[in-house]
Length: 203
Image (cartoon, rainbow, N blue to C red):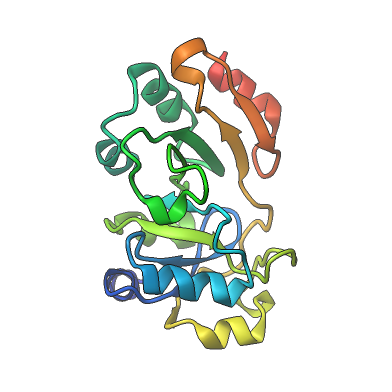
């Protein structure tokens, strides 16, 4: 992966295109978070219900926190302990930012900041956030290589960013939506990061 390829990826996203791209877990589909056309295309490619929530991915933790200024100090501290990494954090969203990613609960938002190393390191320079979901048909297995992605899905995107072989286990989903008020949290889906590692970070 090169800097030029990452720049092309950003241009694709900025105009509401849909891209196939690598994260630190599995391959994903990405589009501009405020593009209704892009989001609708992404969901159609997956065969996913438009009511299902997605996540917004930033490629830099500072940019993520700056984009969500309403997050309380306690939640921000927890986010900074957990990210970047193979986690999706469900955080409070009182300003109802990125509504196309929130599904039926606009005051909760899925947040991703991947840990981008090795072959994926150039992607860390991307400054444009993306609405993202795994690059598979709804209910099908996640892809760890571009070649594992459904052929019709690959044909339906505007660009493919190949990051080689990925670990292949989706992110762990942690609910921090009540963390600010009482310190409570929950693992909604255990994936690439084991629950014990989350406990150590939040203890």
